[in-house]
Image: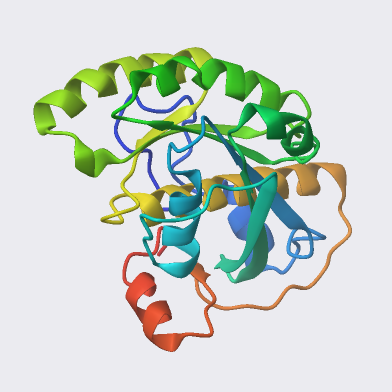
Length: 245
């Protein structure tokens, strides 16, 4: 989590900007137990057409498609990381925003480690609906780390964005969530946000593991935190702005 900071001061209820000393020591000594073997689960919820699928596609595939089909029920991507030399896997569940799919999507909230509520920065109604989404997604989640993510930052002028940011950060504060503005079109803050989320949940999960068990387990890996890609060109591009160095 070193160099993995919130979007700005005051945008987060979480004080972590570095890995806990116990986490660093455990990783250095290969005492990470089952953390490297478990799959971490993140769910993205929010109103229809706010840009949830575009956010996932930008991070996982480094593409932006304006003409995508609306998600039916749920979809997911799997990303593999190296965090402090420990392999770590994240499932990103992209849920439909339509009312008729809520009963389907709700079953996938169970056990989520990360809850991401997305809203459209150019549509204030989607921000008003954020608390409802957070409550529904968090009820069955596993003491999740919470994020409120504003989408489509590229559509707003600086003046318009400054106005909505103030309200968005106030909503995030009431939800106990960390706020991030993003643009899937330009890629602004997309990678930084996901690396921040991964670093935080890795740190949290490993501390729980260390507190619950003293059984050592060797893990193998290299690097601090990076996305493992088969496409070497994309890998090199993303590696330049790793969240943990």
